[in-house]
Image (cartoon, rainbow, N blue to C red):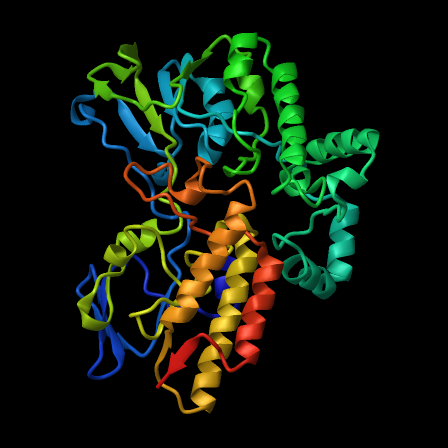
Length: 444
C-alpha cells in the first residue's frame, strides 16, 4: 500500500494519526462540517466515508477483565512487536477468520491452547500461498483484460472458475470430482461448483456434506470432529480461509471448548469462565471479529438535515439507496456502504467500482451545475425491498444466523447488511442509474 501511495504521490494529501469524531450537515451553506480528535475542523462540499465494512472491532464486555492477571489481546490490535507464547496457557476466543489463521501458529509455541467456540465455521483451504510462475506471466501479459474480467465480469470480482450450470445439469461423478478439485485449489473456488449453490437447498446440502466429511477425515477425535461440523447452510456465514486449522485439533496441546452457542461469562484473575467452569490460562486472545458493515458508522456522530443521527435511523437496520447514499444526508457518499455487495465480494473490486462511480457522479454534477445530491425516499425504499427479496431466496434469508445479518453483535437488529445479488448484477444496476441521469437521486 505504501509503495502505491508513494508512486501516486498521495501521501501529501493524507492526514495520519487523526480520527474523525463527527460530521454535521450545514444546510445554510450546503456543506459538511467535520471534527477530528486533534481539534481540526474542516468544511467540505462532499463527505465520502471509506471506513471499511470490517474495520470496527467487536470487543465483548467481559466482567473481571481488569482483574485478570495475564495478557488480553484482540486480533484487531495485535502488538507490532513479536509476541511470545512459549510455555504459556492460552485461551483463544472465536473461530472466525482471525481465530482460524492464528490457531496453528499459537499452537506451535503455547504449552496449551484452549479454543472457545460459540459456533463452528466452514473453514476452506487457502490454497497456494503464491501464484505459479506460469499464472503470473499470463496475468502480466494480459493484465488489462484480466483485471477487466475479474473485477467487472464475475460474480464476486475475483478470478474464479464459475460453473454456469445448475446442479441438476451436472452428473454426480462430475460434481464429486469438481468439489474435490476446488477444495484442493482453495479460496473462493468451492463456492462456485454450480450456479445455484447459494439458493438451491439440495446443492447447498451437497457442499455441506462434502465439507463435513473433510472435517471428519482430518480431525481424529470423532467428538471434536462433530462439534466442528457446522449445522447451517454453507456460505450463510463467511467461510474463513486457513491452512492447518482442523489439523491443529490433533495436537495434544489443543483443546476445543464447545460453547454450543453461549458466550464467555467472565474473566477470573487466573483464568477464563465459561459454561460455569474456570479454565486456568495465562493469556486470552479475543478473535471476536467485527461489527460488520454498519459498525464504523455507529462509532461516528454523523448528523444530517434537522440534526438526525445516522446511527439512530439505522437501529432497525441500514436504509440506503444502492449503499451509496441515504435519505436525509445530502452529499454523503459511502464507499462499500451497507446494502452494497461490500464484504460479500472481492472488496478491492467493490471499492474501485464505488470510487469510479462517485467520481463520475461528482463530475456530472459539476457539468450540470448541481451542488447537492440526495437519495429519494421512494428509491431508497425500493432498493431495501429488493435487497431483502434477493436475500430471502438465498442462504442469507432472515432465518439464517450470520454476521451478514448482524447476529454476531448482541442486540443488533436482524437485517441484511449487504447486497447478496453479486457484484456484476450490482454494477449493472449502478450503470443504469448513472446512464439515466442518476435516477433515484434528487439534485439542487
